[in-house]
Length: 271
Image (cartoon, rainbow, N blue to C red; front, side, top):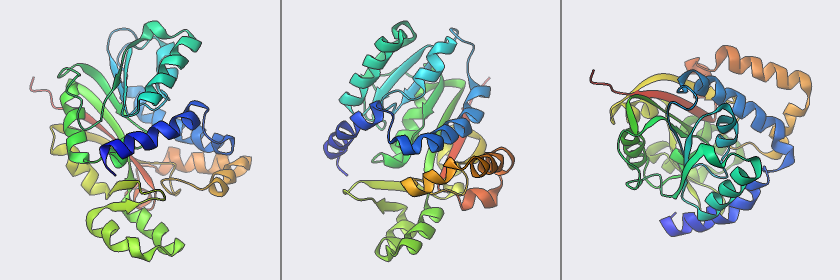
């Protein structure tokens, strides 16, 4: 999808993000955030002592969890409407002092932000899969992290997507998906999807040392249907899947059959 088309698409989606998405996804989103938090929390700077970038922030999912803990954040997104919603939410929650600045930026071109400026760079919610060039995006994420700082990103798994494609009968997508990692969703939005080793290699190519790779919401597709998400309404099922996350998320076999992967990497420190 072209740059302007992508911006228009996310502008349109911004109202749903600001409203908290479909209520039927509530427990799934809770599970998603719990799985991501397991990787975020150990890499946070001391509250007030560092600076965090939420790149591809949407309406500010992580800002509203981190700012009340005393962390200072910069928010950026391709969509100006997403940024408008994030700014309004900061005012509503009384967190304006914790948000240092807002930027309408393509994750592949963030030259408006200075080099080596952030203790932690978050690119969660899939911007690495949704951008036009993952290589350009990871180069920028690495550039922005200070030496010794961290970059955390999640992305879609091409091999689990291939399984979902076959099961849904979308066989025409299979060749481009397996050969190029390209998946076309309804509405013309094209995703970049990665093999686990490919994602690790991409980060290594740009001066980032991968520390952890895990499945987020293991065994589920990258974007679950409402029906799939509602499986979590059963308390026993919900608890069983949370235990899978806690115990098996970094098992390479579980990663290979899970739709979403999260990588945590440290910027090389020459010292």
